[in-house]
Length: 113
Length: 415
Picture (cartoon, rainbow over the protein chains, first blue to last red):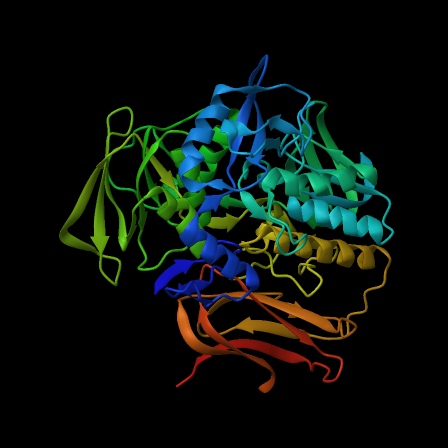
């Protein structure tokens, strides 16, 4: 039996997962999905900022468009910090395609003219 | 001097929602006054995700959530001023403000105050020891990193386990800082469980419960924090100390509604430290509405948005002269309830009422009991209640109209 705190929503359910990956303690279906994922291959959405080419100290906000493996978070951070975005930036547009070959894009989450 | 029907002070999540709702309800002459250079308020620096689950059923980042409302305000051509600070707000609703064009005065028929809250800073918490640089609030560090693009720390201790502190701990770690510890004076965390998990546990950042800063050491920049363990009366226990070599202490020790600008208007203040409001977010000053974190500090922006909508709706009724006061009920928080919003019920025409409150101390296996003059109108069982989680209980009065007097919120533990 394993115990986990669900991170899907602010409710933060306390989840119990038995050896056959049967989940209890979850308020909704998403908790079950999260618990199984967390025990088999934990992954997270990463949000950060990115510098903009030729714009001193101007930042644009970005995130991964899908969850990435938890252990890759710092590698992805490094890669994002090594690159610059081109303005103008529109929410949802791709900043970096297929980052580190993970099959995940980095997309803008704020607007810069 | 300019004249406006409705002035909204603050262009954050509450202010934007209020403006949108008031416009939907037919109010044309609206002005939003925002002190920052961008609408959206604190959402702009909250680049993490988790916003909008209640309203959009999506996990948005702060800037994405704000963008949706900013766009509606722009599409509806609601007027707004940026980089504009309020200098004073006087009786009769004369608003003096300053921006690039100098000082101006605006007269409003109705005001919605949506000025948000501020973070308690070092001056508010009796830090013992030196006064070096390197001590600031978690939200301030968040602004440095996420908006300004500076990294203000290498080795960090965070005091207080509120959500902003936890989220900043993760953000600093991702940007290469070493977060040594989060200290929490209480025996329980003040942040959401999910943030303990995804911000601390994910990065192996230790959370020390019942610990606080005993001494600050450093000549020009912070050099060391001595943390001490406290007993149940929050007194230090001799010999239970941990030293942290660090250059930065971040404070996440609580948020307080920012209402000093309302001082001249004679508002009554609730135990949440914001103005007392009725069920449509009107304060005791007729025509002055308030919404969002300036009324009480929320956990979720979605609830702030809904409160903004409610204030916008109320202000529209006020401006259209459609408010008929026919009830006089005080809403009172009792025993383990630290505050409740609203504080007054005035209009029997509102059939759907929502009470928002927090408990003072964690409790388990309890009934929340809402009474109107000793008659129970709602009873809700809860497995556990935490001070860090706002509760809301809705009641419908269609079948049992409320009576003048009192509504009380009680928490009773089941045997």
